[in-house]
Image: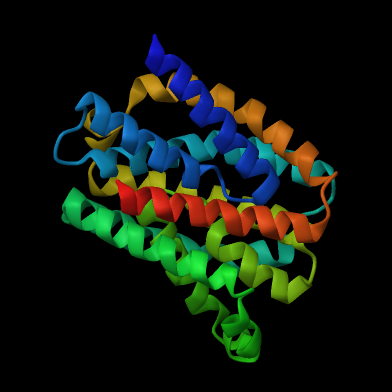
Length: 256
């Protein structure tokens, strides 16, 4: 019974971040599920992989609801979505392939390092990106190829990487978040397709099915709350929340 309440909390918080920060919820789902798997002894030997795969399925639902709300508020830049949809999908293929080849211990190290890098990037107000934005614009396709690979590898919707980049292109944090939520939906959909093609047994043995039944409806409710909060919070506060969230998650992974 305690697990049900934990899954509800994970789903609500993940949904709120999906709607408010364009994260797809995965940055909450994966650490939360990893902690549950370690505490209960589930999925021994591939606890993080199971958390990632389960998160990807959750993102389909949390991402769909938040993307719909953003669409209704006319915040999505579909030109950017179309421009990067193919390359981000190809990146997902690499990420899922790596997940099936790497040990859970090695994956945890990679997961921690990437989160720390992202947290430091946001703490510095992305000065490195700002000072090299002309270069980044010229390699946008490659950037989103890497985005797809890292996002599928970490079980996130890609907002962690998409929002900072997109915000420099359209200079509107709310529209950047909304557009990133759609890209996150593409990442989750492509990742699920490649999960099936690379190893269809993933859906049977490497997904926490009980958590899906609880996290999905909780995340949908949370995404509605998140979108409502986005409309009431100014851009600077959104950036602060986005940065602080990554810092806490990075600290959690290192302590674990």
